[in-house]
Image (cartoon, rainbow, N blue to C red; front, side, top):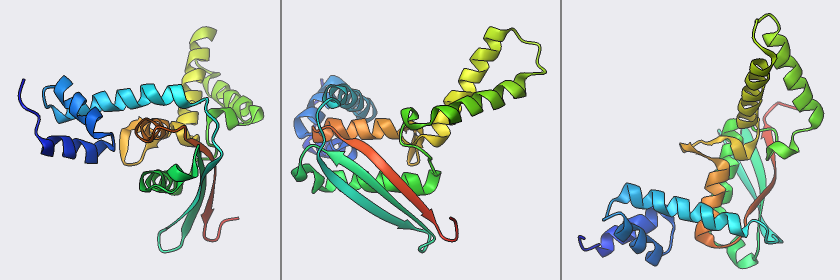
Length: 199
């Protein structure tokens, strides 16, 4: 196996935000392949993030972001476990990324569980009406309706939206990666979006 240089470890750390030892181990595991090492760290971060999601979050930030010369503004509340983490650059960067996502993609809810039951029922009704003239078996129509509903959640639920800077992952994955690197549970609590002239 080739020697892993300090510069390579440093580059991977800057790219992923992971610890130096984690970066070194990922590079050793992948024989110095940056892309594969990044993927290893992402998977590890998400795996360790899942273990932390039950921990209580009592600290965090309310972060405001203004876009388009003051035409669009967003505020997000993101919680973490300690005020120490809430004051870190990494946590503030995450808040900014999520606030920018809200500005760019206009989500309506944080997660699918927040979508009111009557909204889901109405969407299903619309999809069923769209399929009414198609001569397909009921189970096929039900699957198509479920697929359309999944797309609805991806369009309007913040955590399920493709991340604006890397559409290979969702906002939820972005948050879980940050949980993995920071080592604390992080929860996107709520957001508000303001557009000049809109009520």
